Image 1 (cartoon, helix red, strand yellow):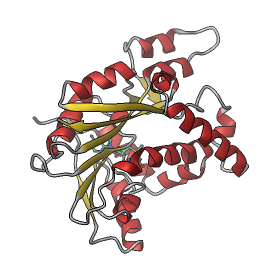
Image 2 (cartoon, rainbow, N blue to C red):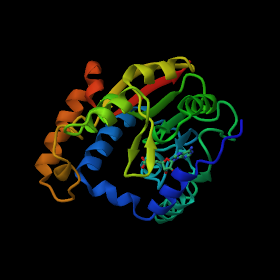
Image 3 (cartoon, rainbow, N blue to C red):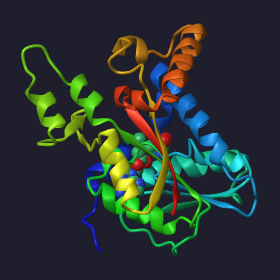
Image 4 (cartoon, rainbow, N blue to C red):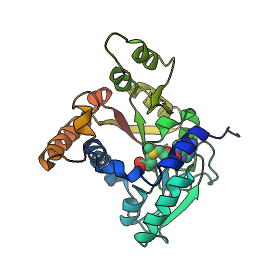
Length: 267
Ligand SMILES: C[S@@+](CC[C@H](N)C(=O)[O-])C[C@H]1O[C@@H](n2cnc3c(N)ncnc32)[C@H](O)[C@@H]1O
């Protein structure tokens, strides 16, 4: 199927390519990244012949540590700007033989069926309207019996976070899917409830092992100013991470988290 180009997303991330990694210094991102890595690490194949697809891998934030664990990695993304930074970082790390960088659209991939030993898709599904198409494609290129790790954004928490005093309309629209949440005035965010996420995965051939929550501590619990700060005591980071890890182990707490990490296997 041919899709109309996702120009808004492409343009947004092309501009962000050279500065995107700066977010990693902010407290929320450090917590998010540490929580993501804890959830991901047990599923990374260590065999040097294994191939991981880092789908919408951006600037290589995950492709580089994934490759350092042993497997080959294919990093695919829509944005040239993000991929330019990824290529520079991969070269700096001397990982050109282990990480292949490829421009691609997750809605229509040109890999063969059953190519990858792990498909990892981090913080991208929420920017794509055709979420089910993407899941179908990610499952298609994954080998049978192998893990799929994909993150999604929580409709409930996103909706609650838009509640403004005296006006519940925007929050209600996001909750009832009438309109999308618009991130930083330019990007539509397509959020899911935990049940919606599980259903998309299950109906497209994934046996879901768990849907863990991440970013419980943002945006409702800790002040946005504190969370976007680059200067904070390391004890605060460790305490909040401990809190995150505790809650992400409780399946029924997922609905409280800003994002989800779905982990499943291709049937
Ligand atoms: C928030 S960034 C996440 C990048 C990386 N996964 C990470 O965690 O740092 C979202 C990425 O999704 C990519 N993206 C959005 N829609 C896409 C699509 N249809 N196909 C491929 N990549 C897409 C963007 O270009 C951007 O690099």
